[in-house]
Amino acid sequence: MSLQCLTCDKIKINQLRVQPYLCDDMSKTKEKDKTYSAAKEKCIKDHPCFGYLQLHYLKHNSFHVQTPVMKCLFGIQKNGNQFSMSLQFSDLQENNEMKHFFDFIQNTEFHCMKSLGLTEDEGERFISQIKYDKKGRYDPNLSVKLPFHYNRFQTDIYSDHSSNVNLFQIQGFAPMECDIYLDKIWKMNDKFHAKWKCKTIHLV
Image 1 (cartoon, rainbow, N blue to C red):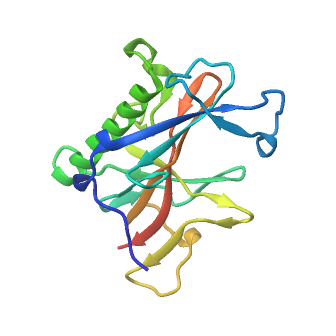
Image 2: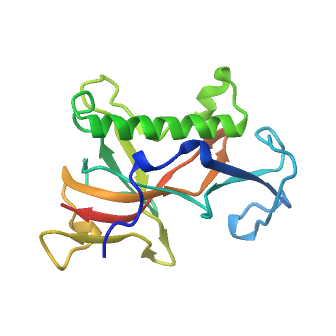
């Protein structure tokens, strides 16, 4: 097992494309019952049948990148049936590699906002996955989801220190590098979300 994604210095954000989809029947409330069709118009952010935006990069239906080594602040966090982790942009001002990755994440979000057709005055409608502590004492972190479907994780994990490791053994502040990806932009309560998901974790 190994990381497979490109690092951010080898990725061109301007080649990231989106395809809008509209919901076929808004009367259906359960996500599993909904179907979607590709929209002909490019800007659908305020369309009453907004479904989602599918991201495409080169030949892939998702946008992948390998992180630098980052600290997983709190281990795996559980909220209902959702799992996530917070990866810190440690030493952001001193570490050029970390600063470059932070800029890459931020510019990717700006690109998503532009693809949605959001203006500068509508910036608050896009929920950034870069999180800051309220008092500004610590470096920001990136919120990353761990996909969990059919009662199992869709995230692989391996370690330099053990041949037998699982996600719930991850300790707070554990150093790791990950393959992460974006696949869709969703709308909820008039806010747009493009959530990074983790494909592979390498504990270092």
